[in-house]
Image (cartoon, rainbow, N blue to C red; front, top):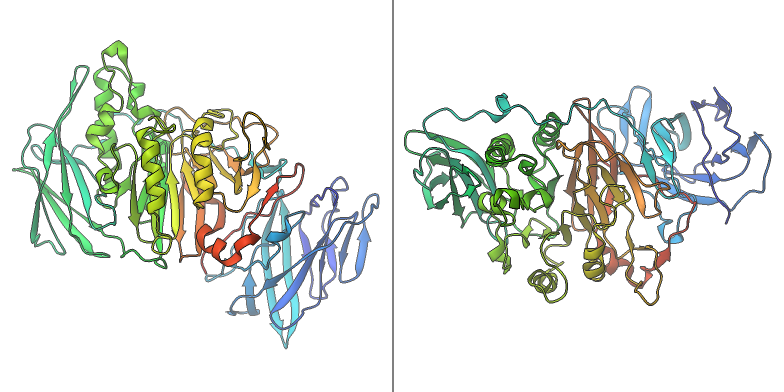
Length: 621
C-alpha cells in the first residue's frame, strides 16, 4: 500500500443529476478521489475512497494533474438513520464522512451515524484531514437514493496534517492570564456574621451513597452540623469535625468537614449549614444505583486556577449538563504567591468554585501546585493546604493516603493516582493499586477510568516525558486490566491519543516505540482549565503517531456514558467567551469489546506518514 493523501476540495457541489461541479479545481499536489455508487437497497449506499490523480463519480472521471497508479479501493457501508421530515423531502440521515484511508483492517466495520439532526441540519466539523464536511443530506424517493447536496470546506488555516493525527493551529484572542482581582464579585464573601463559605462536596464512600460536605467559617468555629433531607424540612442531622491550620503567617478560617451517609440513590437532597447567626442552603443529587447499563455524565477539568479564562471554563462546564466533576489536579495556583497571600488565594478559589462544587461532587486529585514546598518560608510539609481543605474518601477504598483512592459511581469505577507520591514497586501506592485493580468488577462497573496529574503520553514541549517513570511502572497493568480512558492535566493544552502501549520495551531489548493496542487506554490531557501560567503552545514537530488530536486552547471535557458498551466524549474549547465543541469521539468499552471480539484484539505497529480515521463526531444514539 502506498501513501494515501486527501484531496483539497473547496465547495464541491453535487446536483440532482449526480454530476459534479467544482467551483475551484482540485489541488494537484495532493490527490484522491471520491465515488458514490448506486444504492444497494432502500437504506444503504456505499462510499468508495480511492487514491489516484483523478476525481470520479458514477463512472465519470475528470483527471487533474499528473496521473499515477491507483491504489487499492477502501469501501465501507453507511447505514441510514431514522427518517426526519423536512420541507424538501424525507431526510434519512446527517452524518460525517468516515474516511478509512490506510487504516488497519480490524477497523473496517460500518460506521453508524450516531449524530442525529433533531432541529434542522447543523454543521458537523470533522477536521481530521484538513477539511470540513459541513452538510450531507440523503433523500429517498421510491427507493431511489439521491444526493441533494454535499459541501466540503477546506480549512487548512485551522488544521494541519501531521504524521498521525491533527495539530490544530487555531489561535484564539486570549484573555490575559492574570488572576481575577480580589475585589471581583466572583470572590464575594457571603453576607452575615461568620457565614459559611467555600462550600464544596465530594463523594464520601466507595459506592456513591454518601457525600463529604466541606465549608469554612471565617471568624469562629460555630457548629459543624449539617441538616439535610429530601425537602427543606431537613429531617436529618449529621455532625462533622472542625480544624484550622497555619501557613507561614497566615491562619486559615475554621474548616468544617461532615460525612453525610446512608443516602438513597438517585435522590435530590437539600442541605443547610448553620453557623449561629447565619445559615446557607444548597442541594445535591445522588447518583443512580450501581448498574452496568446506567447512563451518567462526567465533566473533566484540570489546572483551573482563578483567571478570567478559568471563569469561562467553569461557566461553560456548568452549562454542560454533567453531574459530577473529575478534577485532574492543580486547583488554586496559590503557590505562585508568597507569605499570607498563599492562604488568601486558597480562600478566593474556594469561593470561586462554590457555584458548582456546592451542588455536585468534585472528585479531587492533587497536582504539583498543591505540593507547596516552600522552605524559604519555613513550609516543608507537602500538600499541607490541600489536605486540610479537600478531603477524599480514601479509607473507603482501603487507601492509606487521601492522595490516592477509588470510588464507584453509576457504571464507572474511578481510580485516582498521585503523580507526586512514591509509586514504584513495594511503595504504599503501588501495593494499593495492585489490589484495587483486582477489586474492579466490570460486570457491575464496566467503565474503568483513571485520573492522574502528569500525562503518560504527551507531545507538548511542556513537561515532555515527565510521566515516563509512572508509565514504566503502571502501563502494563493499565493494558492488562483494559482501562478505558486515562485523564491527566499538568500540560496547559489539550491532547488525545489513540489506543497505544509501549509495554514490550526494556533496557535490553524489545520494540521501543508505542504500538497500536486495542487493550490499551485512550490517554487524554485536559490541563487547559485557564490558570495564570498561560497556554503551552509549543507542540513537538512532527506530531507523534500516537497523538490523535492536540490544540493549545482553554476548555473542559465531558464523558457521557450511554450504557455498558458506548460512551460519548467531547472536548469543548473556550473561544472568546463561547463554548465550541472541538474534538469528539465514541468511546468503546474495553471489557465488553474484548468479550465480543476475543482473540481478534491484536497489537499493530504504528506506521509513519499515513492518515488516521476521522474524529468520530457523535451526539446521541
